[in-house]
Image (tube, rainbow, N blue to C red):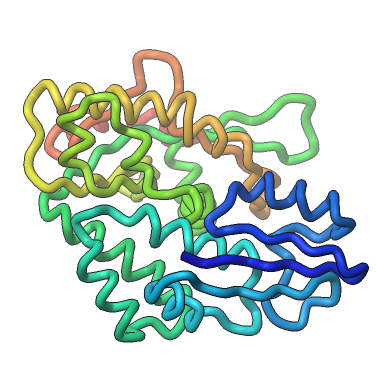
Length: 281
């Protein structure tokens, strides 16, 4: 689709077909003496390396038009990855949009792929779970544990942080919820975010499906989402500090104990009412 030729200041040359493994690409750059990462190497006018992008098909040729002077080698890799892994349900429309130059920037392309993918799943299913946090204010030997009530003050920062944890180059979280073939065939998109409700910040997982799930598929999807909250996406997220006025905040989508739940919106009221006490510090 897209091929990259990177020429170092010494004349050393590296050629790769995109998308490539970003870590392997970085290692190869280091071996040829380029210390900058793919995320910091500009496609135009970089002082460490010259990047030449070419295409081997019509789609690739038109994709080259979406890159600007501030885009990087990693951006080119992300675009190639997202287009090459787009769901079959949107491929015809996506190819036509690319060929007819509907996208002026990579952001327009990535946003439209996300929107088309979600639109291909007209059935929306939303799950909720409690959020807890640990605050490091720099003045104690141990973290201060906080709940959903405290977290509402930092909703914007938390929402942005969990969005950053799901970048385009990672792919849609739906691809990681594929243990049950029935779920994998129906689930088009899954996005982790947050929502304030009754003075308490909750974790929210929005799923877009082509058709409703069976009872067995629903149970399997909930189990896999809990697994992501505890050991997958959520495990990585809870280790990323979120800067606040009161110190670094670490937020968890999972916790041990009887207070934890993952439920649909219809079931939410019965979970919120008994546990309002968890909302404060």
